[in-house]
Amino acid sequence: MRAPAREAKMRQSIGGALILSFAAVVCSFVGATCFGELRAREIEEAALTIEGAAAPSIRRLANARTELRRVELLVHRALDEGPSFRLVPEVESGRALLRNELAEYQRLPMDAREQRVWPTIQDALARMDTDISGVARLAAR
Image 1 (tube, rainbow, N blue to C red):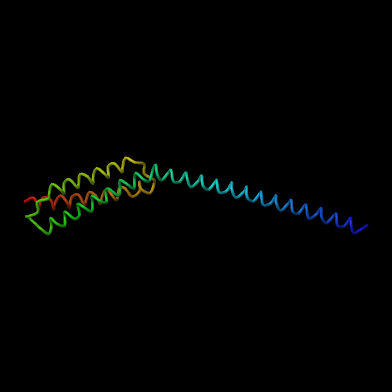
Image 2: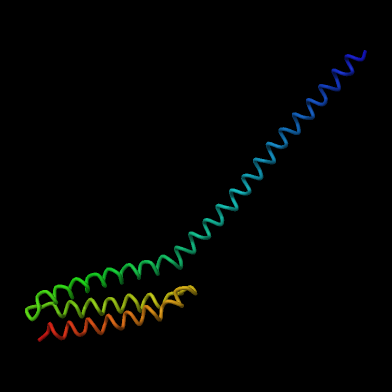
């Protein structure tokens, strides 16, 4: 009689272990799903922040960089060509577009790091603008 009692007890413990194993799998799945959803929400919030705040700043700075490069090339041509340079209006147009893009950028919200370095950038832009004015004056003669 002992053998059937032992066998029944063993079946019961195997059944209990099986139920606990399935419960652990279900709990793991639910926990992983909850964690994944939480991370997905955080990623979506970060993406929306980038789209709403950073993307417009990046676009304005990219446009300003393009204009700065165009003005740089025109200034180099003016220095190479000297008095025969006839594109002073294009230089002035590029400067105006650059100023406009940077003004639009400044209207956007800046984080603390941007606010700290912006005065240094403005000083460098003012020096560059003075230098470009000198080159344009010489080319216009």
